[in-house]
Image (cartoon, rainbow, N blue to C red; front, side, top):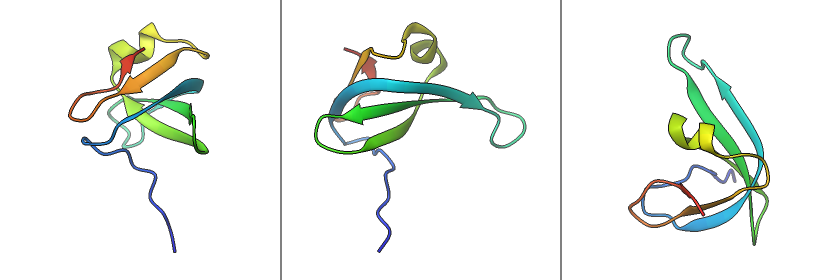
Length: 73
């Protein structure tokens, strides 16, 4: 069985950024990602907005509340 690690809009989590990356997955749009180590599980790769990506660094805490976008915490 394959378990999806896709983060949903109604999910809630918080963790520490362990890596930042970006890439042009479709060849024309830039996507920004962070790898977050959650308190109770393995690292999860999450797509975030450009402004948040530029404002965080490795070691910063990110919080995701239900119905909201991830934010620096």
